[in-house]
Structures are given as C-alpha cells and as structure tokens.
Length: 210
Image 1 (tube, rainbow, N blue to C red):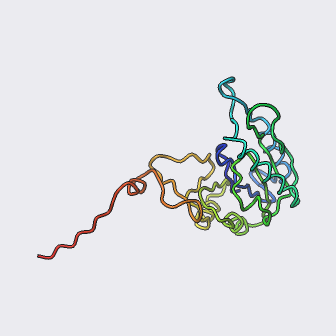
Image 2: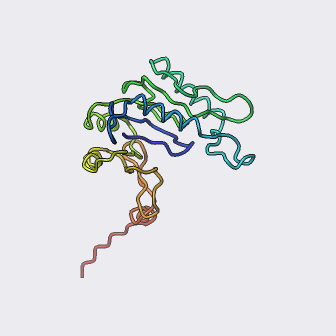
Image 3: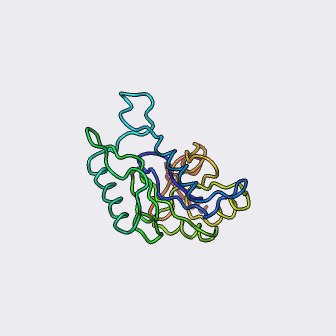
C-alpha cells in the first residue's frame, strides 16, 4: 500500500490497496476501507485555540477551500463515490472534513493532481508491479509510504518508486539527518542532512598553474 497522509498542507495524494491483504488470513478490501473510514471519522477538527483535542485545523483561506471542493466535485463527476465527508463545514472558518473517495480509477484527475486538502482517494491493485506503476504515474514525486509485512516486497517497492522520500510502516515525518527533496515537479533542491547543507554553499573552482 502506498500513501501520503500527513497534514493539512498536503493531506494526501492517494492510497493504493491490494485487493487482498493477508496478515493472518485474508482481509477483504472493503473491511480495510471500513476501518480506514472509522479512523478518519474519529479525527477531530476545529479551532485548536478553543479545544486541546483538535487533530486538524482549517484550510488556509477561502480559495483553498474552494479548490478542495472543486477537486472533490470533479472526482464525483468522473465516477468517484464519497464514502465520508465531501462537503465543507458550515459556519465560521475554512473547514473541510476528512473525505474518503471510493470507486476511484487511475485515470481520474484526483489521482494526478495535488489536492492540498483532507481528501483521500482509494484505488485497488492486483500486483506489486501495478501498484508501483500507479504510484509513479504522477507529475509529482515528494513522498511515498509502504505498509507491508514482507521485507522483500518493501525492498522491491523502494527500488521501483520514484519519490524523494519513502517511509515503510511508519508515519511520514522526516528526520533532520535525512534529505527532504522531491522528484519531477515536486521541487528543485532540498533541505536537511549533509546534502541539504550543500544548498547553502557557493561552489568555487580554482585552477592554478605555476
């Protein structure tokens, strides 16, 4: 499974899920989706200045909220089904609830564009090769995550994924000694780690002939 689900600024790109997940037996994809929906529904959003149990705040402005609404609306027009959320919260603030999209296809725009909001499209795959191909089918390549109990699968996925960062069985928060950078349209250069220090240096080449 490959995913991106860290924060409001870039809440998620997509989740690709194997048709059958087998930790100790076989768990159908619909059971996984149900558990995922329950976890997303449990996320408390609102003003963190008013409550101390808030896990997700608002979008940055009205334009950002409108952009997310348009992305979801277009996904629905293309055939996606809203299983959770899908509508802006009424009242003060630019709040959009965690939104789960099902019946999503790889050719939908939601799978190739950056949403910058709490929207999670889910797509099933049959083979690891298909999953890697689907994950790389993007103009962006900042971060990817893998959740698997098979180390061989993880290593094969790492080799195939074209992203600046890959996280295995953990949340995607980078370490300072790492190098935070993206591939393709996800930026030029990077930060953190010894490679990041080079971004702040000016190279001088000297040729001396005596």
